[in-house]
Image 1 (cartoon, helix red, strand yellow):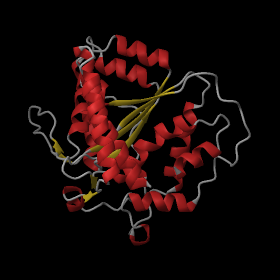
Image 2 (cartoon, rainbow, N blue to C red):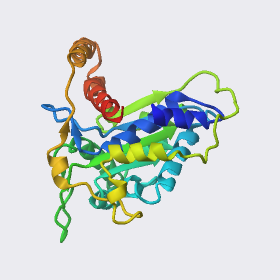
Image 3 (tube, rainbow, N blue to C red):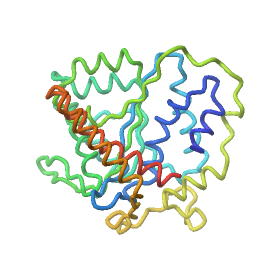
Image 4 (cartoon, helix red, strand yellow):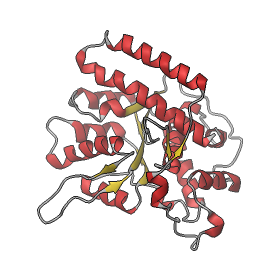
Length: 299
């Protein structure tokens, strides 16, 4: 909520929904695979997509998050992933260097079209396949494909998080040509902003104002002891054991009761949905658990 407030306060067209869509995968990246829900062993990695027409201020949240990384003086740099992903092997190299990264991708509808289209090339389809596999492998490991002379290399506890932005027309047009069987699509969490454009207001603070306490709290969630970092320009690596033995975030009785009601509602809804739509319904529970975990850790 502090990150959302900070982003909205400097916006000329403030939208808490657009800010939240960008903040959730950022906090999930800070958490990495170091936190789990327990018996289900769900980790916080998520893919969010903000849908809004041009002129709604989709770029602002992304720009402010970039300023957070810039003002961290390199401490958080390794958590910032690429804005353009040209191949599955390139993304694999990024995650081999640091298994927890946040990718902010503009024109996400075009990106989805390129990697999920039935007519897409094998190298493009491989990106979609790996996105799906990274998502499901966050509590174990990603092994990937083997090539001649290059054996697969395990990436333990990958925590790939993605925030995409797109106009509704571009995004839904991309899905019209996508394969309904593509496992990536049900894993996307959509934040749709509709209606009139937000009124232009005078921002409450300068976009360049990045409070130190906010960076300190981000570092704390990421498990980074900045004071003990040997170099201010290199992210201290979190010990591997903390990922294999994560901090368990316990369920409260109220949370367990709410989850039970969600499961019952999803079961009823699934029976009324066409077969092609059922994978999307089944992902509701997992998405809800991931979102709850992110909020609990980042609170």
